[in-house]
Amino acid sequence: MTYTLIKRNKSFRTDSHSQFISWMRKSDLMDWKDNREFMEGYAYRKLTFENIVIRDHDEESFVEDLQKNNLLKIESSKGFLGLF
View 1 (cartoon, rainbow, N blue to C red):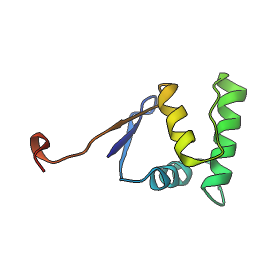
View 2: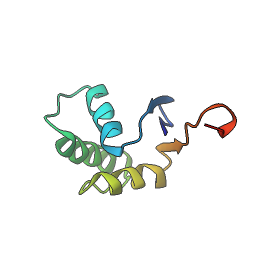
View 3: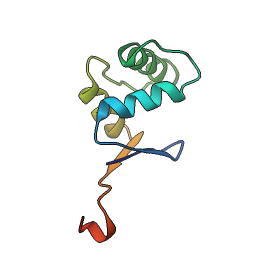
């Protein structure tokens, strides 16, 4: 799957929400100890500065809310013409 952060036009390929969130965490300006801490901080910033609610209690909800708020697009990254 290809995860694309829409506003930043940055993409990451993985089959795991956890790996995608790890990539987001490692790309962030702050040093977060784990994905849980990152999701809490990210959700807080979105609510504070953009009035966007992102659930941070689990990775599935976090990614769903990123998509729902048009912050993230997830596309299949199958091979040529989707045959592979």
